[in-house]
Image (cartoon, rainbow, N blue to C red; front, top):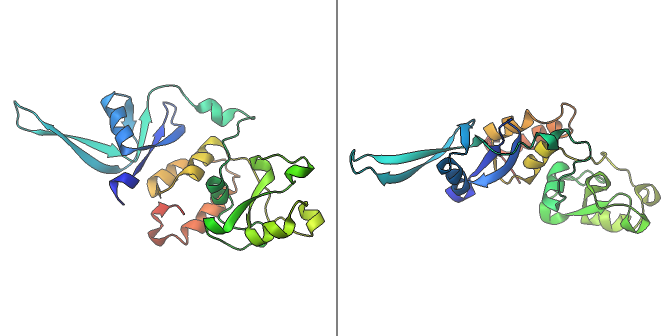
Amino acid sequence: MAASELCVLRADVSGMPIEWVGYEEAAKLYYLDRVLYPMGKSLLTLNGGINASTGLQSTLDIHSIICTSGQSRGHLKRHPQYQPPLANLALFRRDAYLCLYCGGRFSVSQLSRDHVNPLSLGGCDGWQNVVSACRRCNHHKGGRTPEDAGMELLAVPFVPTHAEYIYLSGRKILSDQMAFLLGHFPRNSPLHLRIEQLSETTEGALIYGP
């Protein structure tokens, strides 16, 4: 993987995942002494300047997971009203790239966002009312409910927690980052099974992503 594709998982002082940052931003956090300790494997080593007195070149190891100082985000995990922002890529990953009507697996370009209870009937544009649907099923359902369209919904849509959203919004997730995130998922999260199924189709099962 090229250095430009490397993403570091940043956690707060409580060990709660916060966000993905590039290796340049991670290096800045190291420089500002904001990194309390690394928790992941070494991704790459950056070379700095040469010490005039010792003749040695400084180096900085960038790790895949870093615990940083600053405001804790633990309240996001506990707050019952918390909802992460909704985006199609995260939605499609939540639903394992499946059409939740016909059960087929599709590429991102072949999927669309379907409102289970249509907006025209008072439905909301939120996680609990949207599912991934292939364009054919979405067109067939139209502005009807699944019941009115004679279509069966294969899984109940759910609102991801903050840690689950960090996974859903990631592009290329390394195995140690994935293991760290899984430790913050609810035990009954549907994502456990969906990630297991996706990993079986990922070559080497080391990088999780579309």
